[in-house]
Length: 205
Image 1 (tube, helix red, strand yellow):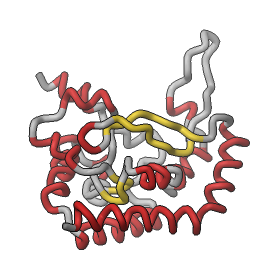
Image 2 (cartoon, helix red, strand yellow):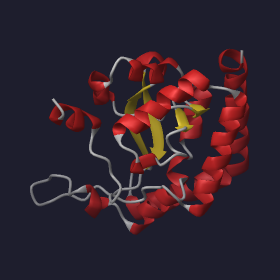
Image 3 (cartoon, rainbow, N blue to C red):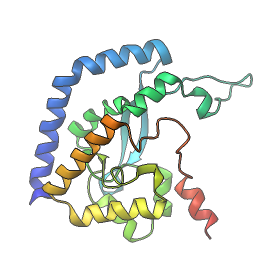
Image 4 (cartoon, helix red, strand yellow):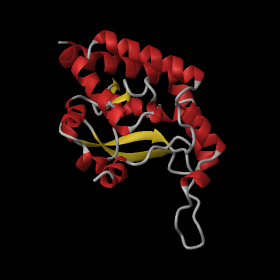
């Protein structure tokens, strides 16, 4: 009952309240991104959502478009500025994703939407993560995030799908709030980047 009917209504209400209360903050961040990092202000990337349906995820950009003499983008660690790290460490880069919640692409809580190319490498049970809407935050994000290996992270996603409830969502949102305030377990730079799932699983065979 909760997952099928109540959860979506709560998502819409929360996203609307968030946009109303923090619309001014979105505007300020958008202007700063434009000045410090350039256009476009929003970073969009295709991600798989519920039932593996592809959608465009919205975030504020956190990197410049600096290129080398041959026109190739410089490495992420070069293009990620101090301002970009600040946006990531405070999760301000996630604010535009409230629009994804209104559209029905995302939920407040659920398995984080990962890269489209990872779809080929999920084990059968891990595909359960796509039986619900992905979320801005999830069970894996409040239990180690990038400090986890892929088996642990995807395992927590499956656990969430099996145990989804209002109480669990409330606990995850509360823990997320605490972590954002403390800036703990947040990979603001490239130092906590996990090895890509496709690379890890290809190497394991």
